[in-house]
Structure formats: structure tokens, C-alpha cells
View 1 (spheres, rainbow, N blue to C red):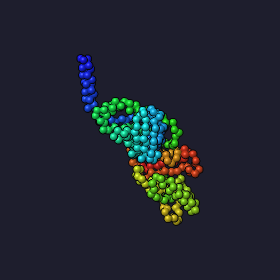
View 2: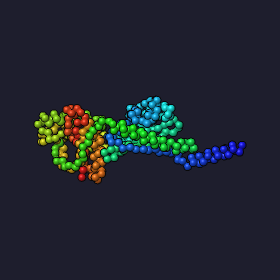
View 3: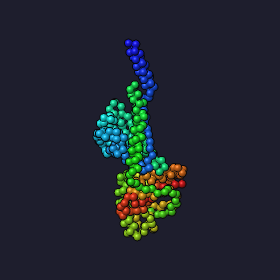
View 4: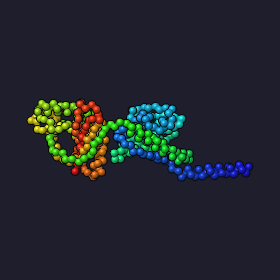
Length: 334
């Protein structure tokens, strides 16, 4: 009986110590790991902005290949949702709450235990690479078991995050390049006269506006025998995170026409100093070169003093290989 009594005392003492320990544990847990990836932000973003693309790298699917997933909502972006059933990972669901293009994706995380937590990815430029951060915050961990489990699972969760990030890095870096960006330089561009037309459009409407306007401009220049003085230009006015921009389609000309059709005007572009780089790839990838140039401008403490513009060096109707499409990007600075 004395032995049983002492065993009971020891057990009660251990339980008391565990409960005391749990009282000092936090009711929230933050797990966060990162990796640098030598590929474009858009390729990284595509992997985390689509829950279906998690199948390409998910450490949870790797741990349980029999895990059953169901998808609903859009294929990517806000509202995309996944629910799963797994003997290894447990059951749960996840929905994208916030999606910032090439920068951040935030998800709700529900394990069916009354709490809805948050997990996220952020993408940050790191020189010629990008830093991908994966984080999760568990809140309202109950006393004592929730707090104890939070403490015990921390090493495992960090290992899972490292594994997942390593998988993403390997998967994305094995993809073929979708763009090439040339060296950034500072140049002086001469003054010139542009035949121009402007419109307020959103991102989806830019290609159609430019194509329609350039076609009409080429016909006008040919008809009036104005002679080209350079390649087509697109000038963008507005905040980078706006939903619409004032887009100006323009073509340099050697002399001014006598009469301009309605909707067209002449734009005298002054000589100026610019930060510029050449971009090779589809037009949907040119944002990567914008990011590089903006970083160069900030790192060198330069000030932008006008609207940026693209010059379309190659004609997409002639150049069918996206990696051979050449665009030169300009940011005027002082």
C-alpha cells in the first residue's frame, strides 16, 4: 500500500507540475520559416495562390498520399477553398482570404475544433532572388491541453514548414525560365514628338486598347506619310496598386501631321534621364523587370519624376516565341 501511495503522490505531483507549466505557456503560437528562391515572383506566387497547386509541393500530401481533398470556389485567389480528410494530418479546411499579386496570400485555417486560425505566404525581393515566408498563427489555445499541444508541436511544425518550403524551391527552380531581364542602366533619352491617344483602362483592357490604337496609328502614319521615328510606346499614369490607369499609346514620328483625327494628339516628350532595362518574355511577365528597376531606384536613392513607359522592340505578330519578345522599360528619374 505504501508503494501505491507513493506512486499516486508522484503522479499527482507530476500532473501538478504539468498544469503549472501549462499556466505559463502562451495561448497563441506563431510558426514561421523562410527560403530564398532563384526564380521569378510570379512563378512562386502561382504555387501559393492556387490551393490545387499545393499538390505540387505540399508536405502534408507527402506525409499522407491517401489524403482526400475537395476544392470549391475559384481556381485561385480570394474565395478559393480546400477541405481535406486525412488519417495522418487530421481533417480541416482552408480558404484564401487575401491575395496581393506576387506579394502575399492569406488563408483561413479551420481544423473543426471551434477556432479559425490564419496561415500565410509572403514574397519579398532579395537581390536577384525572392524570399518566401510561410507562417501560421494558432490562437485561443485552451488551458491546459491546447497550450501543451502548442508547445509540443512547435518543433514538428517548423520541420514541416521547412520541408514544404524546400519542396516549393525545388519545384519552382526546376521550371523553365519565363522571362529574362537585362542589366539595369542609367541613360539620357533625347526629346521627341509622339503621336498619342489615351484611355483609362484596367489591367484586362490594356492589351486590346494598345492593339486597336497601334493598328489605327500605323494606318494614319502611312496615310499621312509621317515616317516612323521609333517603336511603339505605352505610357502608364497612376498608382501601381490602382485598379485602373491612364494608358497612352504612342508612336514617335519625324514630322507633325497637318490634321489630326479626333481622339489623337501630339505629345512632346522632353529629353530626360532614365533608369532602364531590357525585358525578354511575354508581356504578362514584365512586372518582374518593374520590380527590379524600382529596387535599383530605391537602393540608389533616386527620385522618379514622371510617368514610366514601355517600348515594344519586337512585334508579337512576327515573334511567336515569348522568350524572344523584347520590351524596354523606362523610369524617368532625377
